[in-house]
Length: 317
Ligand code: G3H
Ligand code: 13P
Ligand code: ZN
Image (cartoon, rainbow, N blue to C red; front, side, top):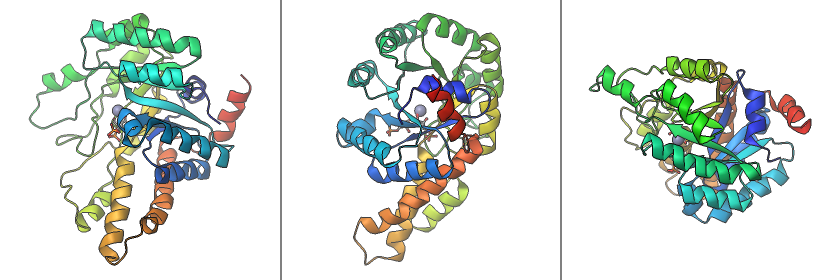
């Protein structure tokens, strides 16, 4: 059942984080639903701008509608990941999305507030909620000074003003993570003090963590052993997911890790079976491998086992 992001956040707040997983094709969708059902977890499906144009924006919608029929007990929201203003309006008008992200993090503070407010004003009458982003995602790199690294983090006082003036419903904060498989060349620690201060200033407000893939080292080693070249790949310590959730992070975005599972399965398959060429052969291995990965993440996020209680809350509304 596709539900509102707001209701899922209400159930999760302070207890666990919803896994927000990106999808691009049907194999990912199959693994995603299987993994969430096996671990009995509510979740968020994210569709990026790139994913919408990879085939056609209607294709992923159709896949998700079909999955909703195949797994009628699944509980999830559909979210636009890193939208620009026009894509947000397109998703709001489509009637399919539970929430949209307007990513104005590259703009000035005032421009970011203005565009977020325009999107929130268009989304709210339709019951759609809006995620905004403030601060610049960036890994902790050895050559970057502490002052330089801190300047990119979300400023909690600005976050309070941003939330009050923009009308956003959740905020993606920069706390030291970055997108992709090469997040840190220096230390791996996250700046939880930023989250704590925002929560002190804005109690109860749902926060979002982007760039949360853990880039499992065994996965990277297997990819490299099967012909890959991903030396130095490093991610977030997944033991930090739950502490972040308990501090008010309701949504934890994981995309890169799923791509690593895909890459490992396909590289190993074609290395070991060079005579094969049928796309379904590695696809049959990828889907259960991705499902296992999703279930393992949900355990770490604390969302595993929450399906029944979250469904009861949503249905009571
Ligand atoms: O944050 C970005 C997500 O990982 C989506 O990536 O834009 O390549 O689809 P994408
Ligand atoms: P990763 O690259 O760490 O998976 O982050 C994904 C993300 O933030 C999507 O918005
Ligand atoms: Zn992101």
